[in-house]
Amino acid sequence: MDVAPTAPTDAEPAVAQPHRPPGSDRIALVLQGGGALGAYQAGVYEALHEAGIEPEFVAGVSIGAINGAIIAGNAPDRRLDRLRTFWETITARPAGAWSWPFRIDGDEPRRAANTLAAMQAMMFGQPGFFVPTSPNPWLSPRGARTATSLYDTAPLRETLLRLIDFDLLNSGAIRYAAGAVAIRSGNFVYFDTTEAPLGPEHVMASGALPPALPMVRIGSECYWDGGLVSNTPLQHVLDHAGAARMLLFQIDLFSSRGRLPRDMMDVLGREKDIRYSSRTRMVTDSYKERYRERRLLRGLLAKVPEDRLTAEEKALKAACDSLPELTILHLIYEQAAYEGQAKDYEFSATSMREHWQAGYHDTATTLARKAWVRVGASPTGIVVHDVHRAEEG
Image 1 (cartoon, helix red, strand yellow):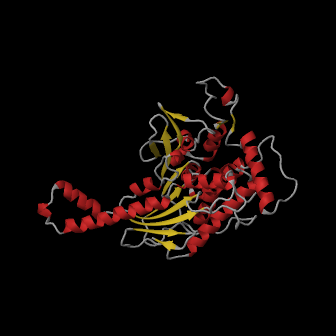
Image 2: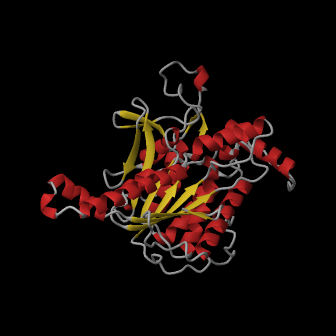
Image 3: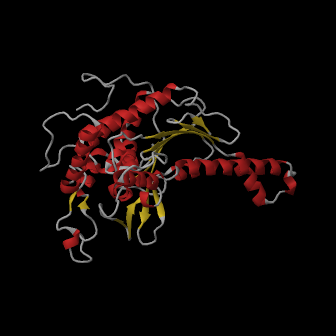
């Protein structure tokens, strides 16, 4: 099965030589969580790969952490193939599932088919990803291994080990980070390859969304999905941008903006969008304000003779002088009219291909706007291009 909308069946599309767009010292890829919608991010990566744009810093939460680990844990010439294999594996028909014997068209029939696919995922799990816990947690004794999640993610561990070279992931060739939540403290944490070697359990911890998926123990602590606190790792990347001029692709799977609900299904879907969108633009607006204040402070400190500055003030002046220049390309998945609140656990192959194609199309369209894919001086230090709403911040 070929999920790439532009890839011919007999050969891969031409791929440009790896390069950095004008003015950029570093390229970052920031991947939000969103379950089955994560195929959109794979489509984004395909378009970047074809353009010769390879990330040097990848950070993700939940499904974004899985996609990110596959990208960072493989050589550039294998990444796209491994992403395809992952998404084809987990969207294959699970054992015991049934399928429609005819093509489905129209919003209402398609919504019904998507609902059926989501029910199948709930009943049977998804191949290479998760299976129902046995015995059911509601029938398990308190404290039993099976008592705290509806599904078992042992298949996911095997899939990650098969598709990710963890030696390469930890080699430093690409910086990789995955966000998770420590259950006992409730603190948000990042597993970062610059701090300690990572394994499949770190990737799984980032996507362990309760009560569906089981907590993951690492050392003496247990972790859940990072989306419980923040569904985007944007702040982690911005905090560690250093003095680089960075081009950052922020890929969101839930939109903070949307239509007014008209029925209960709309209400459930809109609530989920708002909860998991994580206010990406709020983060960027906060950093713009921080940059503005730092630049004002730098101007004030420059007026003071060097010999009158304290050691602390000199350090602050140096920090203000080394603020990075950032250009953020913000891509947001826009759901189809027939998608409801189950869109993030509707793992049909048809929807996967549509999500992949949407990510590919949005990114190819973005890259065609050459002025956007450029890092340059800005009064605020941060430029944000919103792909779906032609605004520049």
